[in-house]
Image (cartoon, rainbow, N blue to C red; front, side, top):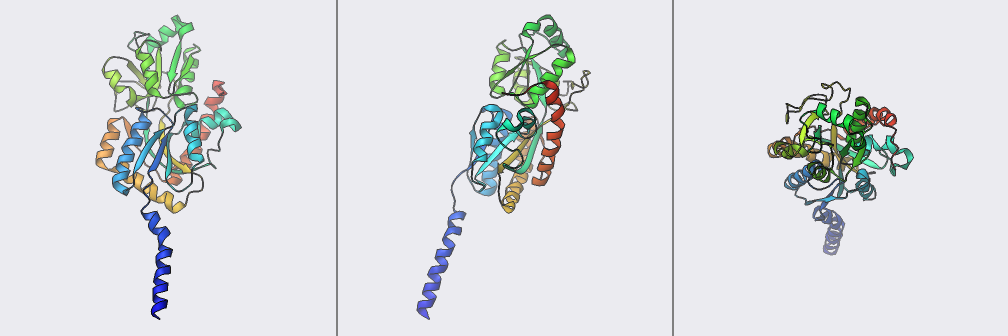
Amino acid sequence: MRLFRTSFAALTALALLPMAAMAQDKTPVRIIVGLAAGGTNDLVARELAERLRIITGDQYVVENKTGATQRIALGEVKRAAPDGRTLLLATNSPFSILPAVYGDKVGYDPVKDFTPIGRVVKFDNGVAIGPKVNGQTFADYVAWCKANTAQAAFGTPGAGTASHFIGVMIGKAIGVPLAHVPYRGGSPAQADIIGGHLPMLINGLADMMENHKGGKLKVVAVTGAQRSSLLPEAPTLRELGFDIAAETGVDIYGPAGMDPALVKKINAALVQAVNTPETRDKLVQYGLNISPSSPEQLAQIQQQEMKMWIEPVRASGYTGE
């Protein structure tokens, strides 16, 4: 009997080894971001990483995998194991806009290749002009474009983004074909508009506030349906007479095939993180609207946004690479 008890205890200990190893897994959770460091997505990712570390006890590292309009980052997450140790923080563009742009050539299935975990925030884009235009209003930019059609252009954080198609729609509305200049994120684009190499930039409003306040560029409009509390004096494009309104969502996805219980657990931690007063205050200071969703709600939002962008993309004539 004593031998049986000893053997049983040994077998029980062996059986528990995998669970103990899982509980003590010190592998950092990777948050993959497809845009450059210093931009809105990067700031959100780093703030969430620190808060999630406190909430869960896990270590989180932010990795910027830039290029191909966030598709390099999506590819990294698509290939990862569905164990919750690799997450994607991205704008809604690769899930709602790029499928309409590239069709079967997009390189992934926006529904089948990823697991929706939750939307965390939303933000408005701003329309800014720089010293190349030497103006103070959106009307100044329009007048400059009509007088300098060969140089009429706008920059964005990347081709195929909401900013890109907003710029195309603005060009059609003012009757001037605007050349699109895509960048790998908003930071390098700001450097060019401040340096006088780019007349207009459409980018996350929060990203541009410091330079706006410093007089290095001038935000002359916002792209949301309502004025932003971050810059209430800036009119919406609709107020300026253009039927254009779009917000950008920042979402968390994982690889396909994640355990629903694990997805629910990660979502609960994210909701807690963005609702923690310290984190909420920081994100609001960045000009972000706290908008946590459930995994099911994000999946529904994605379907709605995919439908919403089909016509604007088609009307733009842009077909990607």
